[in-house]
Image (cartoon, rainbow, N blue to C red; front, side, top):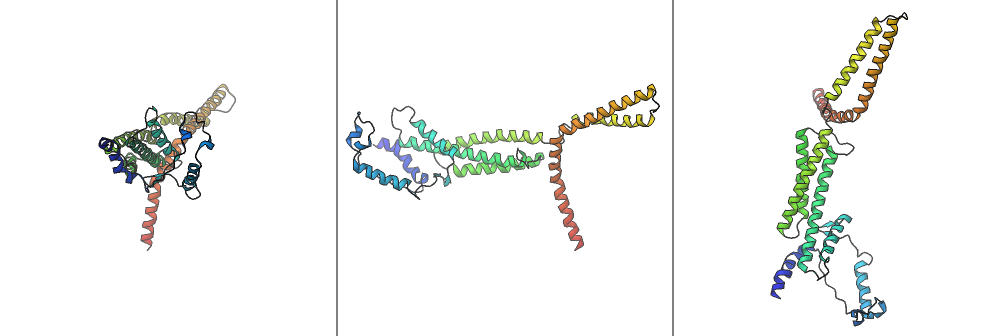
Length: 294
C-alpha cells in the first residue's frame, strides 16, 4: 500500500486542489447481482429499484436545470477543440484494454491535454495578432523590417505569457517540453508571416516594372514624333507612318494595361504603406498649425 501511495496517490493528492475549483463525492448503492452475471443483456428491469432511484437523483443533480456549466480548466471555459484533446488523451489510456489506468496516469493525461490546449491557444493568439498587422486580414499592410520585428516580438511575448498562465498542471519537465515545442511553432509561424510581409513590399521587384514602362514611354514618344513629322498625303511614306503609329499605340497601350493588372495588388499595398506615413504627418502639421494660430 505504501508503494502504491508513493507511485499513484501522492502526485494526485499534491495536484488535486489545483485541478478543480470544487470537490465533491457521491455514492450509489449496488445495482444488483443480476447485472454482474455474464448472461446480463442490459435490461433495465434487472437493476435494483433503489439504484435506479438514486441514479435518477444523481442525474438530476448533475444535469438538471441550472446545474450544467461549461467545463473549465484553469479558469478558462473549454472549446470544442480543447475538449477533443482531453477526450483523445483519456481514450489513449484505455487503448490496450488490459487494465484500468492508475490515478497518476489519468492526472498526467489531463495535464498533457491541458498543456497542448495552452500551446494551441498561444499559437492561435500569436497568429491572429500578426495576421491583423501583416497577414491575410483586410486591413493588413506592409511593415518595415524594424516595425515587423517589434510587432512580432510583442505578439510572441503575449503568446508565451498566455501559455505560462494556462499551462500550470503537471510536472515541470512536461510543461517545459511543451513550451519548447511552442517556441518552435512560433518560429515557423514567424517565418511564414515574414514571407507574407516581404511579398507585400510595394517596392519589391520594381525592376520588372521599370523596363516595360520605359518601352511604353518610348513608344508613346515616338508615336507623338511621327504624328508631327509624317505627311498626310496618302503616299507610301504616309501609309507606312500610319501603320507604325498604330503599332506603337497598340504596344504602349497593351503594356500599360498589363502593368496595371499586374500592379493592382502592389498599388493597394503602396496605398496602405503611404497612409502609415502621410496620416501621422498630416496630424503633426495640423497640430503645429493649431499651436501657431493660438
